Length: 490
Figure 1 (cartoon, rainbow, N blue to C red):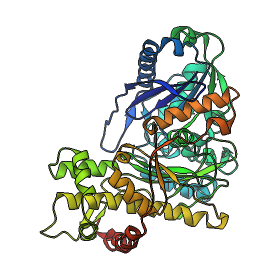
Figure 2 (figure 1 turned 60 degrees about the vertical axis):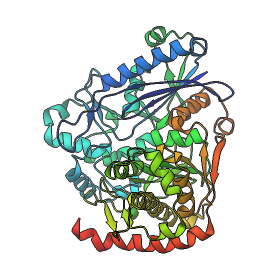
Figure 3 (figure 1 turned 135 degrees about the vertical axis):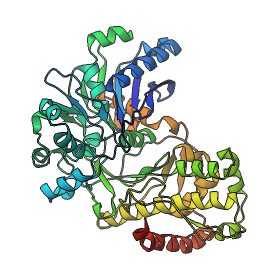
Figure 4 (figure 1 turned 45 degrees about the vertical axis):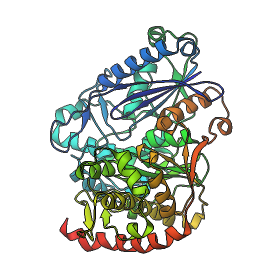
């Protein structure tokens, strides 16, 4: 039996996986988030541990026999967070999270200090990444910065508590801006630019590698016996990829969560920083991945549902599904930048826009426009990824479709035609990151990658429709022209 632990921004999710790759049980517990100032986002690491203990007790009570058989643990977590420790290993301040925007000025300073940073890391310096956060601490909290002896990512702080070992996996480490992503090693140059060195960093391991065993005191508290191996694990998106079985070049997923993600595995390091595409190491050995990120996706559909007084997203989605193609072609265009945008524009000031509103438009027309606009934004990101790897001629496989927005069949069909790729909604994808963490635990215990990374069975498949693609292409060309025309007015 293998335990997957997924530390999300809103809470901890656990999943028990048996030898037949069946999810035996799940449990979760909430974690509070704090915003002490506008644009800041923090959490107390102690709250992560408390939530983990709560979820463990739930799982033990729910499935005691299965729980007693746990032999491996995998970790997944939200990326980019900064947990800073002193010489005694004590947390010095609340963790600064991925969605914290305080370090914008430090991003520019880091790229000036290391002009080759984009080539080394495969990424633009963005406030969400870890390195700018440490530069911010050096400037604004210098006395605290002087006490820092170790920096850990969120899930790796949990590992520290469970095993006593400071280790990170390469997918999560890719999101720090301290990793030489092609070499899969820390970059002394980038560390030095932040006033740090290798002694501050955890050891690195591939996601499927063992990184230690559960401490005796933790095992006793949890009611586990024998040696329990803890795998390196993965950042949340790479863990989700393992969860849906994306392990070879071209495989990946589209996520319609609060934010939107397109994730594809690559055989080689393929940066595309000019389009704000992320190029990270995958959680599996000698593979990388590209990822485009939108800051508003399913959250934009929730917004338009509230805005139009519909109350129920499922009801509004059903109305969109009933629209004729002629009605869809007459809908306004929508720029989905309600919280700024990352890929491809990297513009925190970008905002949402309805273009082409007319008196005859109703709530359902706006809802369709939001679905379509999010799809066009995802296509922007996918096209940037395609351009970066053109030389490698990487084929594209059908993509898994995950996230809350994936429940809408109308949206799923629209996305398949927009992206020009088959989309498969897998069974159990709501817990993909925890599942991926459990699969990595099985591999760390000696399991075969090909066996444990099989794709999930699809509960629905959506194919591109040529007649729909034809008129979507015309609307997408108008969508692409809108951003540069309005950029100066944001």
